[in-house]
Length: 283
Image (cartoon, rainbow, N blue to C red):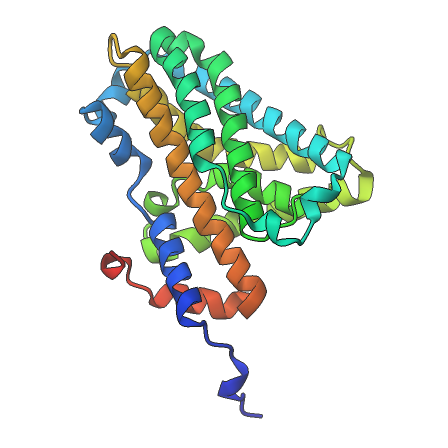
């Protein structure tokens, strides 16, 4: 039986432009390049000069930061705030990106002043602020923040920050990265749904956190390297953190725009349209 070509929905011009912006955000230059332009030095050299104990500190701080975000997500779900799942137009207001940037810049100023030794204190605070910003962006794209799956999708954005330079084929990078995280999200979501909210130590959630941490720690190392310049100071530290959160805000905007369009048109239609977009012509 032949398929009816009219059965496949076509994205409207506005939605196609939204998808084009999303692809630009998801496949934008790597965080490495953005940070290097701020500090005025190749990040590879700065990474090479970092002390040996730095990687261990980054790993520990990243795990702690993600666990804090997970606890925040589970507490939010446990409260089951009716406003979080409201479908009134007010829930689709624009996200408070600038407010979150300012807050993260403040923590970056402290990190710039105290360097690597501030990481165990600064990173959990910075990451939690970033997670709140990601949730705010998800809400603005029509996501239900009272949903377990949505909260975990917000957490996975922290593991998508290197999508544009981590895969050989940049055009497929986002969907490959997302697919790699999807199974872990599904298992963790099912476990919470079946066992309740007191499952933050469960095997499925720990595997998800470890998967995200392995990716997120790469970006954290780059951020730490950018702050490792002698006498970086509070001002440059704030700038580095602002670039850091801006990068993940872009990824969140792209990811949740794609998800919004998928709810409207279907996954296959949106992915097919995504692959036809040439972001070198996107402006």
